[in-house]
Picture 1 (cartoon, rainbow, N blue to C red):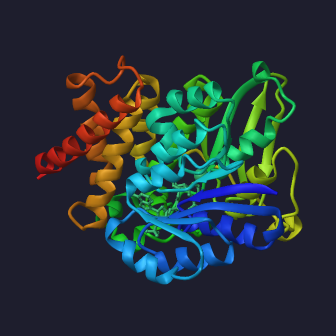
Picture 2: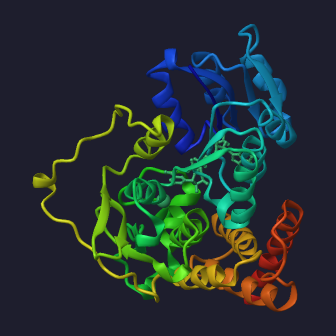
Picture 3: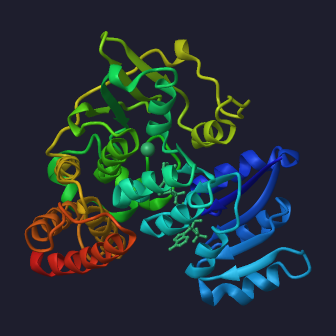
Length: 389
Ligand code: NDP
Ligand code: MG
């Protein structure tokens, strides 16, 4: 039996993981499930998966969650601190699927207990990659990528030497606006940005796919996880979202990972690693699909990619500033305070200001420094919004 904990169990990735586990309850001993506002789902899953503890990050929902789980034997807790605390209860396998920088501390804490961390929360690597990797090393823990592109790269690298890797290509669907005239992007609405052509995901990452901030984050995630030179990483627009990544080797071979756009594949790969499980995902009929297309991303349509490439070159705490500014800009877009293209303007301005004033490049990547830069970048993003007028 494998003991498992899911951070962000009520989200899009979390629910895909619950779906895999609920099919084989005899194989898993569920330690903790965490969620946010959706306590009905959290309580339902805690009961059917026989979790020892269920935690919501919202203090004000404690009593409601208690009522939902009254008499079930499931322990209940609430608040950000409670989430960090359950990360101290060791599990063999932990899924980090909280959205945003809030996922960093639970993941780090779980790693310090030697868990195998299945990492969907890319923000952890973008904000504090070296800290995360070092913590895993220090405690004999393992990190497995769950982002589909990174799981694909990881799988293409099985049995290979990193010295033989020349390039890593991650693919992007192009998001909601891939066929829009660039001039129309400024007027894109929240509803329009919130629909993805291929993947069914949480709203925030769906909007980040339309702007390609998601792919920008994934560039940094690739650099941090695989420890490669930023110049080796490329983005390719691939509308069908079936080839998730390709690895190019020194002999000219390209190993591509092909699969349906279903997060249960990447989660299931991490759940069964180093073996392969039998997963309930679609088997592709390539004859029916017929053709796959690839094109270079248009920099005018996706300014986020260049900002991310610059941030990747800067290193240090630039990733923490980038992520926090992006999260704040996304909040402002969702709240209808700024337009779609203002997100890239704000993040770019924050990086420019902070690299000049707040010293990003050479700072040490400690949790304290990351938190400080994260908070500062959110303030700078707000200032940048006022300056844009
Ligand atoms: P969702 O928004 O669907 O879910 C996020 C989860 O985190 C929910 O359980 C939510 O609770 C909880 N949560 C939200 N805010 C906080 C907080 N401040 N503290 C603790 N918990 C919180 O996100 P996704 O599932 O889409 O994404 C999760 C992570 O996986 C992200 O890092 C994303 O980039 C990454 N990812 C997602 C993919 C996808 O297919 N969705 C693909 C690849 C990576 P509640 O909903 O109950 O409020
Ligand atoms: Mg991805």
